[in-house]
Length: 128
Image (cartoon, rainbow, N blue to C red; front, side, top):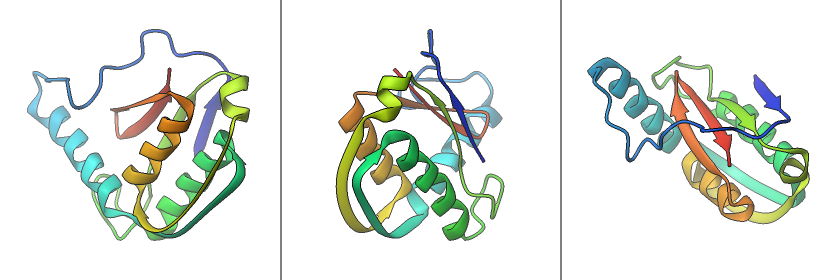
């Protein structure tokens, strides 16, 4: 499932790499989702004038198809919450590759859009 919010993210979450949680369980869930994002490989990516919105929908669908039962939520893929404005969502990218992880593809998307992503509550948030 993909949720698209057409508003800017105000004070979005703190980056996974820089955040230290008091709760070890919460931190462990972030680590599990990061491993899942690294572990799901997409066999073929062909973004030709693809909007950011459609690229994220593609990632969400492909994550479900290629999820090999990795934690958290085995077999359910990755849920993306997109908190970007209309202009950013309509930006297009051109990118082709084979056998990249969800993390690698997401890094390409955020490179083209100057966005950031955060992990919280077993979801990946894209925001500014």
